[in-house]
Length: 360
Image 1 (cartoon, rainbow, N blue to C red):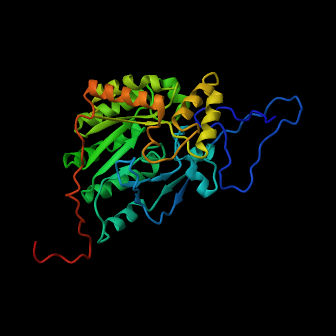
Image 2 (cartoon, rainbow, N blue to C red; image 1 turned 135 degrees about the vertical axis):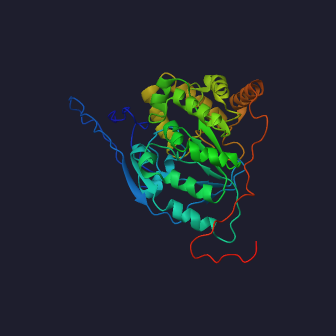
Image 3 (cartoon, rainbow, N blue to C red; image 1 turned 90 degrees about the vertical axis):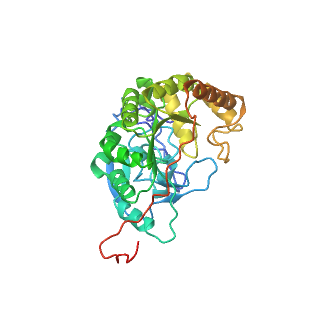
């Protein structure tokens, strides 16, 4: 039998360093039969390396997503959310989607310069850019590397609209003045992701994110500064946090949110076995029921990637969640109007060496 080296580590979400799906071989520790004390697991330190990106704006045509352009300032995320659907991307760089994803990070050191180049292309068509669609733009390493800040400064100069989704309240506070200035021109809106109001659940589910109370506090600060704000209740995890939906939406509304969204738990590729390990470590008595409900939404599988249903799921349970969400939003006055940012103000600022126009 395999030895249980897959145990929870303080401050980390994943329980193991599962082998990525592109690796030619994998290994597993085995019990050799000797009755001896287990060795202490080594402390995992976060390492951050620069990455020279070749392009910075990612485009998509998915009907499930409300934006067509996004930027990911970082590869990997120290927040360590066990459910993060971005984890499998670490397999592309021969690292594990498990503990490697939250401890071996990369920052895009040339992000701001690349963004300027792409915005200056003659054929560029302005549409909102989303920050936080993959890894969190305000994860802890942003305090030092300031990649997100540099991107926002470029977008501000170009009058380019931006939407942000984050669980990092402390760092978005740093950019409050910049975002408020953009919001006055209808160029910025922010969604704060609140997965649970239970601090103990947050500690294991998304260990290095801001506390629930801190997220609600910064949501209120953003709203008071005139920045349009919403709340994302994501992901909805059956039998883990689903009972909190109405309480999260109401708390966010009271803090100033005008919009809300939700996404059902997604378990693509290596995320499924990692989440099963998390259940075994943190919620063993619930594990079977949780996965039964997950599979009921996904056609009997851990995950289905079909457009149109991957964010919402299918079946009776998914339908019940959708109905609860709609009723709660109606009662709380959320999503009464669709918020659109202004793309008509986009302009390429002059730079040194540009020829001045003779006529305006």
